[in-house]
Amino acid sequence: MGRIARSALLLCGLAASGQAQEVSVDGSGTTNPSKFFWKIMDTFRAQSRRELRMTYRAVGSGTGQKEFSQLASGDYSKSLTAFGSGDIPMPRDQYNSILAPRQMLHVPFCLGAIGVFHSIPPAEVSVDGLKLSPCILALIFSRQITTWDHAAIKVDNPNLAVPAGTPIKVARRTLGSSSTAGLTGYLTAKCAANWTMPVTGVAMGSAGDITWPAGVDPVTGSPGMQDYILGNKYAIGYLDAGHGHSRSIAEAMLKNEDGLWLTSLAAMAAVDANNNNGVAAAGKAAVDAGIIPASATADWSAVNLYSKVGPSTWPIVLVSYLYLNNDWSSMNSDDAGLLKAFVDYVVDPTMGQPMLKEFQFD
Image (cartoon, rainbow, N blue to C red; front, side):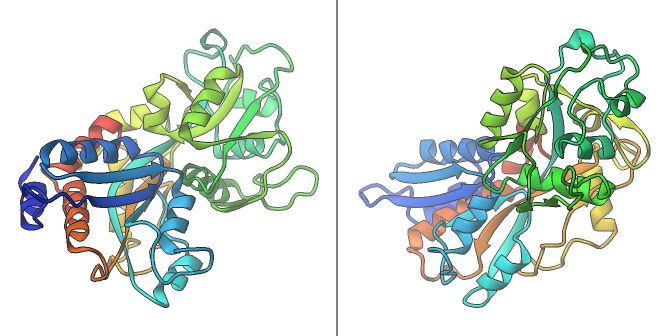
């Protein structure tokens, strides 16, 4: 189980026999690292002789932020969950609302790529792959481009052999998804002029403040997005790379800041001069640029890893965080001990961190 988790359980009496009271930790948030969390929780349950109730509800970053920040709507006095998790930092207004009665921590624990996935039949896609620039993506997801044979798409894909007039089926996530925040933040940063509503030209927005046009189908969770793309020919959507690759969904190539067309899979396989792959390289670039706050209690709302330079750097990289309260004194001591053991395991370089590769995170 590992020295940190085992010692924490023993110190808190969680492995002691003769104690029947259930010890619990409940969290909620992003779907992206959910399998990583569940595997750690399974390990804890298997190793403890005491009853542990450890749950993590994969409901999306926005819901995870809401449940961590509020006990009930508008009540920021305490959290509904022991911890939250998201691939986006807490928005400034929520952070400030939490800060009034208490203090929270952002604990970054991994980096992940957001990719654009599609279901164009392989025989109709060039051997060079489907190439979609940010400005073309903005036009597709805003429904200003609605067919795959549109002249603007053909500029970078002259050998795309779809039937004339083939409609593009577009999906988007619901419930405050961090994947949505990643894609829309990237489109806003790279091609705001195209990221507008059809006809009116009004900006579509990003993160949790987006107005979607008619013709963009809502789906729930990463599984919903996977099922939509696989179940609809000529569809397009977005997923964290692990969820896309786990079901062998075709991925579009994006152009990074160095002008290289690549998929997230290629970016993760590449290694730069610092021995970083294309996802980790984005993190290093952010650290080098000084955009990462020095304190876990600070406001992290401005942190993003979009479009960092580097020969194989992926352009849409998200930081995954644990959201924690700074003061645990109101928690049952055993529950607090279990939470500490879980957090320690997640961030430990010899235990939780090596597991991330299994789920295509860094």
